[in-house]
Image 1: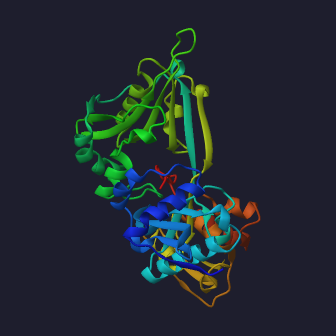
Image 2: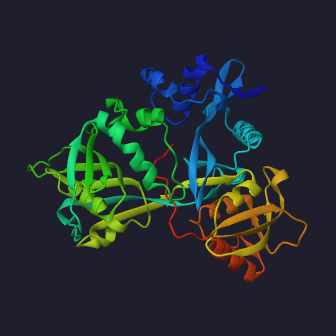
Image 3: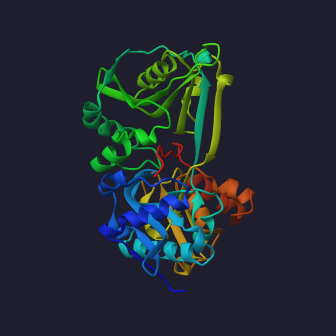
Length: 407
């Protein structure tokens, strides 16, 4: 059986989307196609064809991503699927190879993704770059202890005002947070403000709240509510925090306090939050704050020299690392990294290596969220102990990585 891998055209998007929906066990909604086209990059989305039938899919959303001390172009890998009828035939491997070839041709240094299953992508060179957390708190115990220094005001707005006011807040909030990705106007409309009832899962439409302080808009909240009562008329509703961004501590505390005081609900939930969320330290009863952590963004270094030169390092240092890349052997080799807080340079070298690791573990450490020292304790990084300690100190970063949305 001959399987062809190629990018798709406009007329093949429906078949592409149907394949993806089937593989993920979802219904296909034809009315979403026009909206998808606004952010769909046809020259970046590959399909596997068995004759005229699409049997596998994989796509990319192009982003700019914050990294420690800077930013890089990042390929957000998504929509990866293979029909159940065509599993175990090398289709996923062929699509991953085609994607990475395109990234290399475009000189994009890294690729990122959210994994549907954790074991899948390590063999293609992806490493777990940060964890994410889901939060749940009982409203009766959700009391904030923080008193604002210069109180601002909360104001409900409509979607049109949010469309204009929120993008600068998003950009400012993520400027120093590794893992944060850029959003285009089309992305805002399709992925944030689109509010089709079919995707609400019993919740209301979006509500939009601004926090406005002395400097203007200092934060915002987008949320939904699912009303409910038990057999005795006791409230059982849920507030779902879809997105909460803040530029000041006052805004952060006030927006959470607003979410905690919505009437007729019993529970507040939030997904894709930071693992080191300050919220726990603002609560009167922190034990009532239930956090469930899991794998977040996975990262693949495509161009070692370019990627390591693009970020900054916590302490100055010089270290030679040997990278092993089984999926793209051309990356395998020794690299001299010289860097610090003010800049960095990475280049191939003939010097003896002092630190040894796989390209997946380099990706895991790239944003500073997975410590090289911890990987060494797990037996995944080797070399001279002093060199490993130096590399660990260099790659660590003062801000915990966080990607607040799945793509």
